[in-house]
Image 1: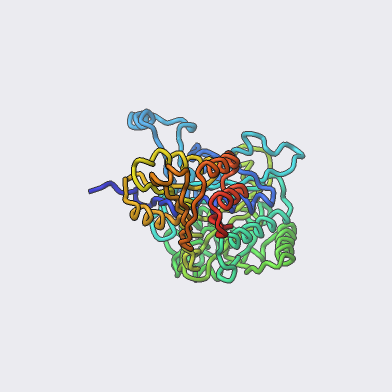
Image 2: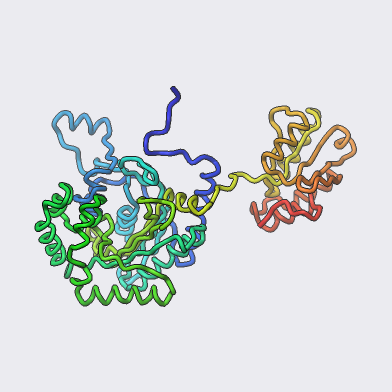
Length: 462
């Protein structure tokens, strides 16, 4: 039996891989307009970073991390020894902790400096039970803003995410934005105790996991997927009734900014998000059609204590992450299909093998001018080459045969209109040389197609 991809992973075949590249480019374009710059962090970090940053009681840390032990460290453990903290490494289950670690390590937000606005995109890893929309290796795009505590940062980030969803084609009418505040160190402890007391009074109605959470972090019970637990937690105390004056003022300001931007949202007092580092603003974007229970496509919030948790100075933060695979499901539910990965501006066809070297040189000249060009490498007949050109979506076919080469000509057929014209080969090569070195896909590429192969029907669109 042929080897398969590991359970919970998938291959991005050419069409989807090309879409993932466009997806990231669109994110970089949208986020760049808000001042966010790219950052790349390692795929694995010291396990302690996630334990301290995300929270030991979270499902992510307690159940879902892939932790790596080298052969040498495994031998140490089997021999009854202990492995040093710096040698305990885990694949990243999310992106925020690593970015905050990088900000702290490299002092990207010195005292009095402007906030660091950073954007990342790449794979994350969680040892979950694979299902539709949930994989063990999955891709995220996220942003982090470190160094500013104003509510305008929260609102700006939320608006930016909604603008991105619109840019990639997820219909606004199929999404729902949920917002809430989780309070801060001044008001959340009392609220946590109120929830714990409520859960204790309803212990016989809650699952074992929620009763365990009641002792460690009762707010995590709001995330329980058990319908019975969800019904019980509907009656739990509401955070809005326990916010301190500063948190209430912050929350009201965020909502006012969203209102001013004309962004619709729903206040959800049970929204807590899944990680322990959140404070004050939290939000989530859900798709309301075609995705079932796995309908969350992105979300995030404020985390003003995380930099201190990983050893830095007090630095307020805000961020969000979106799941690429979930976005793909949302796009497919809306009727999106992946476009072909490769474009072909021109196909160079050979009547026989005697002209292959001339054809090969023409192909390279076209590519150097920024065109996407293909030729046959399997000795197909001329008819077979035209079929291949059609399959590749070639806009034009340039035909070279012994007669054409002897006459210094190239016959060009427009594959849309089937019109044919002869072009002087030397003049064509001279024109192509003018565009050599220009950016691929730019105005020069379009001009070169039109000037060299032109017949009033652009080969490159958009």
